[in-house]
Image 1 (tube, rainbow, N blue to C red):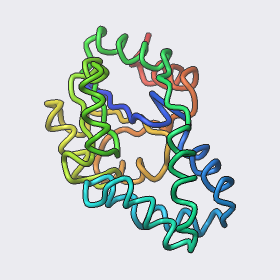
Image 2 (cartoon, rainbow, N blue to C red):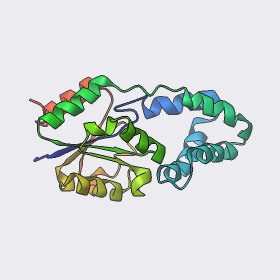
Image 3 (cartoon, rainbow, N blue to C red):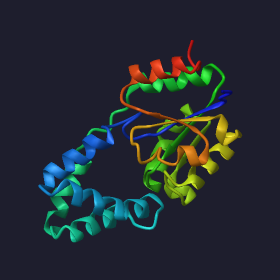
Length: 200
């Protein structure tokens, strides 16, 4: 396998808590049925990630569907208080892989505000390409999002590894042709990269 580029998700891989932990905390805070919450969340998630809905309207619609619109102000404060610290170990790995000659990219299902923040803070400078779904109009796992990502990196999709913390985002890997790695922690990721010859 001749890999030339490695892509990273943002939330749950480079920064913040995992998607599973995020859902768990929101579900516990709202005290709602987990399955119902996820169905409603994914109903609107693509719309906020492709800039059809603002983040505020996204949460309003979720709460409307759950019949708890009165919890909006409390929920926004709660969401804003969730940890978003950068995992310096993972970011160090990003820099190491870039130094080793791989093209490194960021592909995040996220908002225009997040994209602006990535660039304003200099975070995007760690990557050869930094794409956010709201900018390109397609969100993971849409094959078009990965095709645009590979094109911007200047590689064939088959030359791309992509690392994400959710199985859903990686669900089209076989169809698209990139090599998926499900992220759990940095140590396991390093071992996986060693096993396929990326790190020696």
